Length: 91
Image (spheres, one colour):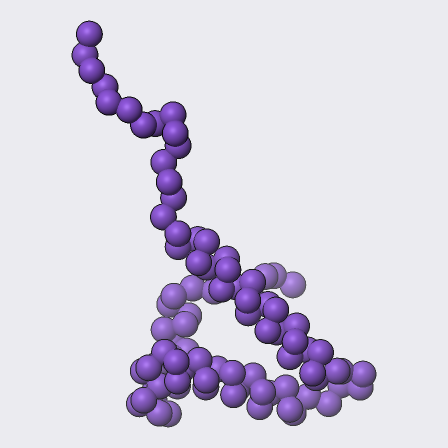
């Protein structure tokens, strides 16, 4: 099993699908509500024995937090190395 592959392109395509259903989902906050509702809808239809749905929701919340932290860290501007600072003066 491979890891989850997220990209801006994937998110944009998902949002296009939701916007086709509800034009107001162009608003990112409403779009996120749709994604959350879909997750709840899919989970409600799961019938595996022993599945603790509330625990699974808690796991998903933790995972979502990890994704937020990782994407924010990836998008943070990188500071240059200290050794690269200075003013060059010819001799």
